Length: 77
Image 1 (cartoon, rainbow, N blue to C red):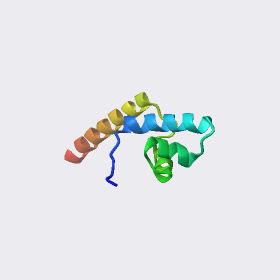
Image 2 (cartoon, rainbow, N blue to C red):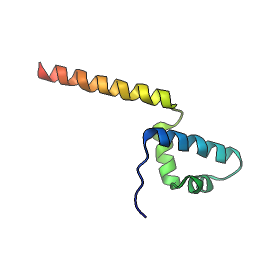
Image 3 (tube, helix red, strand yellow):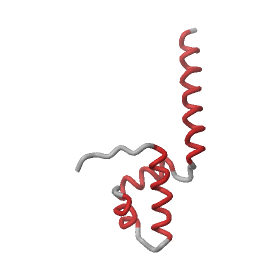
Image 4 (spheres, rainbow, N blue to C red):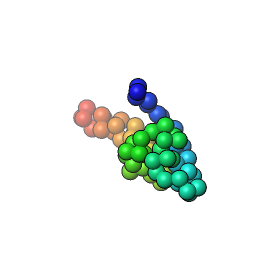
């Protein structure tokens, strides 16, 4: 099976869909299968992106870019 790469926005959306499936009474493996991922992948994503909204993710990316820019400025000094 070829690996699929999901964007971070898609990951957050899939995590929300998994929460809906689980609240409907499906277990974790059924919810992951419905989303086309493994339960282990779901767990890793949940640790990294759990509780995060798409706008929070965009803010995080902006902060990381700014941090990288500032580190580069400091290194050039």
